[in-house]
Length: 198
Image 1: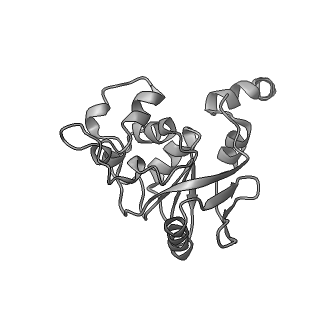
Image 2 (image 1 turned 30 degrees about the horizontal axis):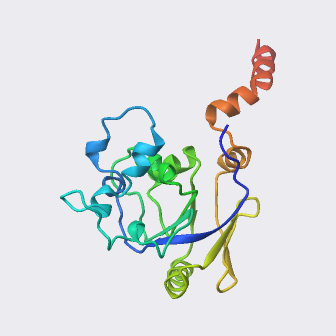
């Protein structure tokens, strides 16, 4: 069982770059690890942007800027393109993000995020732009993500948008269930169905 997702209100970290691919999210050299060590992957999220080639901190990168913090990553269009590595979603979850907001996600990465209890929220281009504007104007700007109502609200402007989510994934997020938890929870129904077929 994972932490249930209901309504999250948080400040945001802005990453206004388009076409951020999974190799930028977690570089290929970290894919040797086959077990999901969230701290390891979280520590290496955006590794080549967070650190300089000599291993020192790149203070210009937003994750290293103490002005911005929060559980919501606001990203540019076409987030998670490239290879289908699930490690990218592990890194995002391991860093502590619960929500990623973008105007478009690569399908496989979007599903990987959902499978790792990170909610990908698709918004319109104008809403995304306004969100970036609000965060840059005031880094303490909060965003409310309401999963039951499927709404996202920019609390600086009061503007809201509805977002889509698969009904099964919504159920799993709201109840803190992964696919195996869901099957175990429905074991009696599955067995009854199987008996009924026999």
